[in-house]
Image (cartoon, rainbow, N blue to C red; front, side):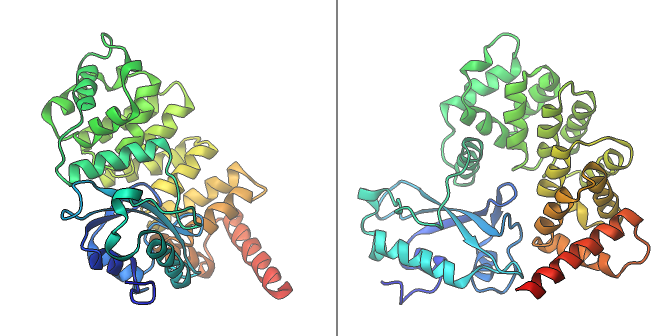
Length: 348
């Protein structure tokens, strides 16, 4: 097998005899079904959660005939102006894979499936790595780590056990097992008693799992009563995947219309709650608030450029150009944005 005989990452993994899972890691960690990944690789659909002009994937794979180990690649591939994967970049990554690992992953054991440095691999943050490991262990039905029991014991008695004994991985493992009744009850009893360090790690993990309406409501209360802006930031991230979508939308509407979200909150809304911004009224109010936070429009330009690459918000953003009922600050900001783009295009 050579880079000339395979055309996609999926094809390489299948020809190598592996089973695999793929996760989108652009704006949180979200599992992609196999057909979606096929469509992404074949440019049949845009990347759903691009960030900074790249698609970010976590790929976990294993070959039971070779080893009982699972291997992970963290891959970033540039996208074009339509948010489609760059085929040239993907092919260059495949060439690096085949060169490093050869046919049928025959050097997997000696290399640990590690690839040489290349522009298409990335290293997640420690928090993201802990969350990813917790998610795939649960997805693959692997035995729970010993740290889970320690984290559960701490959550049940946070005033008794020292939080310093918990690893980041322990807290991530706790979050992915949130459906357990004992964990659910302990969270209900002690969420507002957790120290800042544990709470922030826990909320970071929440953004990658489904949380119910009860926990959503508790997090919103925690946001409203928070003493520090950093807690508000982490709680806002933790609400990303709530199943209580309408409750979160109402919270965001009130925060934007009546509250005073700081710049970090506004950035988190774009990065984590972009699906809510497909609602026209919320999008307009949000962009006005962004402009109020930075009249120089640097923040507006950055957020607009970011969100216009996201399929779920692209149409809503582009449609603003055709509206004549926008608030004046937003209308002027959009006009300035496109005037600058036209000038740059003419200059080139």
